[in-house]
Length: 379
Image (cartoon, helix red, strand yellow):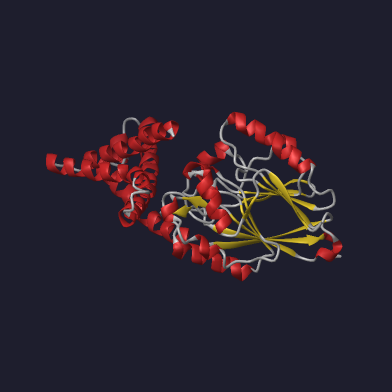
C-alpha cells in the first residue's frame, strides 16, 4: 500500500501539476481563477482515494459518484498528458533541427493546450464507447489429448471484470448476456473478478448464478482480490457459484484437468508459486487436456511443456493506448493467442471490465470463447 501511495502522489500528482502548468502557460489566468483551477484539480486528485476511504461508510451514492468522476478524470488526464507530452517532444525536435527558425514553427503554449485538449475530448469520448462495447473473441484449439468421444468442449473466459464501484449491475448483465449466448460448457474467471468493498458487491453475486454451464464455473485469485481482501473476494466468488481453485487441480471426468494457481504477491512468493504450479501440473491427469488458469501472463520455466493451454489476463492490453507500451515492459507478451510450442498455447485476455477509468482506447474489452476439439474430429 505504501508503494502505491508513493506512486500515486508522485506520478499522478505530477500529472496534475503538469496539466496545471500547461493551463496557466496557455491562458492569462487571474489569481482567483488559478485558485479555482487548483481546487478543481485537487478535488479530482483526491476523489479516488476518498471513494476507497468511504467504501464502508454507508454513503454509497457519494462513494460511487466520487469514484466514477475521479476515475473518469484519471483517464482523461492520462490522454491529455500523453498528447501534450508528444507535442512538447515535437516542439523540442523542431528546436534542435531548425534552431534559427524554431519559434515560427513550434506550437505556442495556447495552441498546444487546445490541440491536446481536443485530442482528449475526441479520444476520451470514443474510449468511453469502446469500454462499453464488449467483443466476443472466438478461437478453436485442437488437441490429441482430448478423448475422441469428447466432442466439442466450449470454454468461456472472463478476466479482470473488476466488480465494484465502477462495474455494477448494468455492466454485469451485459457480460452475462454474452456468456449465455455463447452457451459454454465451462466458465472460467482468470482473476480480478472482484474489486470493491463488500457493501458494493452485495446482491451482485446473484446475477452470476443465472449462468450454469454443464461442467461448472471456476475461478482463480488475481491481485485485486488480495487488495480488497481475499476472504471477502472468496465469499463473493463462491456465492456467485464459482469453484475457486486455490493452488489445486480439478479433474473433469478424464476430459480436462483444470489447474488453478493463486496470484503471486512479491518476488519470494512468485518463486514459491512457480514450484507449486510445477508440482500441480506434474500431478495433473496424465491422459487429460491440461488447462492452466493463472492471472498474470507469465509462463514459468518450471511449467514448460507441462500444460496444454494457459489462460491469463491482468494487463488489459494497457487499457488506454499508449499505456500498453509500459505494461509490455513488465509483461512482454501479446494479447490473444500465442503458440508456445507444438500443441502448447497461451491466451491473454484484454479483460472484460475496466480498472479505474471507464475508458479503453485500442484495447476493447472481451469475453473469450474457446472451442476445444479432439484432433480426430477434423479428419
